Image (cartoon, rainbow, N blue to C red):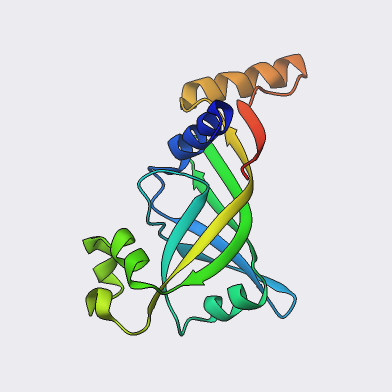
Amino acid sequence: MTDARQQDNEKIWSLIKDARVAMLTSERDGRLYSRPMVASHKAFDGSLWFFTRKSSPKVAEVEAHRQVNVAYASSSDNSYVSLSGAAVVVDDRASIDAHWNEWIKTWFPDGKDDPDIALIRVDVDTAEYWDAPSSKMVVAFDYLKARLSGKTPDLGENRKIDVR
């Protein structure tokens, strides 16, 4: 991995690591459906992992249309991340073991041996993020300054990244 790619991945990780919940969007019958999901990862290496039930409608959606979007929003930090890529359903024991944590047991009380357990891996192609100043006073000041000057407020850093 190049240094630039590593830096991009570290920036994305810094923006998503504290966001417990992401919105996973997939397609069914020509319509987009989003649902909250908790990612299972310790760093961002270009892929995101989500536990799911094999019987869930999103599994059929991912198998029919692999292109998905994952969005994170942190209003307290004024950071927002949109990740697009190809999803695949993974149900091998090694992957389940690698991503398991006790918090997941809330949704899978039978543990890792639940016959309905699987993972959705999203291999991210592109990412876009918005990282604005987190201080509400700074945001309020920039807004007021923009209103008085007629200029657009500085909303922080916005960048598109080719992840793969």
